[in-house]
Length: 169
Ligand code: HEC
Image (tube, rainbow, N blue to C red; front, side, top):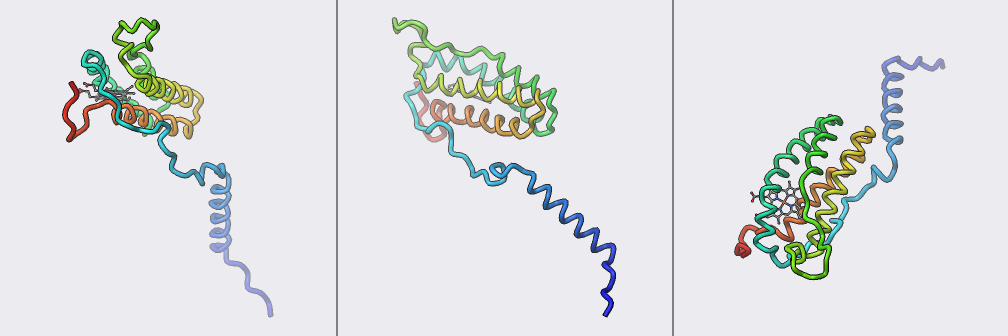
């Protein structure tokens, strides 16, 4: 009994399915299987920052809010040129320096190490976003954008006044 010829639509379907499967296989295995990552730093409330430090931070934080919106818009539209510009704006914000003397007399001496760790995380993630965007590595850009948000939220979870909590002095 002669076998029926394979209809051309079926050949097309098989070819498309194979192409889609190949496409899936090309993804790096650890990318597809990545589990949600735990926060890089364990979050626990710390003693409130000195009032003066908070006053110094407030205006730059308001600028951060504007800057991260611009960055998010650029990242979401995978506009690598704007991503680099927006990341540079965040990096241009003045940062608080770690205490450089052990005399314990400066405002910075009153700031805990955890604060500076979050500040370092913010800088490292922002630099990574700019580098990834400049290299056209969109997956790395997406991950670094997540890391940046984790630095903002992490520091706030430790040091900002939280809803329902009495406000820090
Ligand atoms: C190293 C710690 C730290 C990091 C990192 C950080 N913040 Fe903040 N942020 C603070 C603290 C502390 C306050 C509270 C300041 C105060 O008491 O007024 C604050 C307050 C704010 C506020 C409220 C400002 C206001 O008007 O009261 C905004 C908005 C803000 N941050 C945005 C951001 C964004 C966006 C990022 C990330 C790009 C970020 N912050 C990263 C510590 C941080």
